[in-house]
Image (cartoon, rainbow, N blue to C red):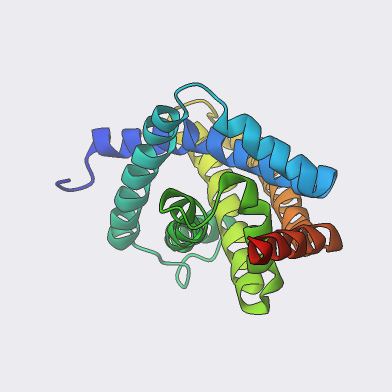
Length: 223
């Protein structure tokens, strides 16, 4: 990556929407099933995803490789950026600065979250059907719970504000009025998506997941 190349930036921007934006929405819906349907609902959602045909290749080319490029190049862009909120303290400049800051937080959070969950499945420490129990253990830890709240808010803001920037940079929202309306829409999306993720985190701490985790532990001890 030499300089801030036009092509690399366009690929980085596009991957933030397709497929990563779609992945965030899918992840939100899957996790929200924990709030809406409890332990059984979340388990059913996980089973549905893992029963998809060619799921490994869907995740490899639809999530992991795009995420790696978007994250690494995003860190490079953040490093190259001139964040000057102290000089120009207007809304969009603060959004520009927050986009870079939340990008770094999101990059760290996502890979840490993947290590705690998907990597544990890959190495055989946790089964797919036990992810609800694992999330209960994570969410019940006060330190992790606070870090997850920070990570979720950072990721959802980065996604929503990134969508606003995508529409501008690709020439879809042209002019101050269109961009102002788009800003209101995407900040609304930020609030909705963030609330749904936070409700999911609260659900993982609930009694139903606690009982499921306790029953799983008793079964393991018997075996």
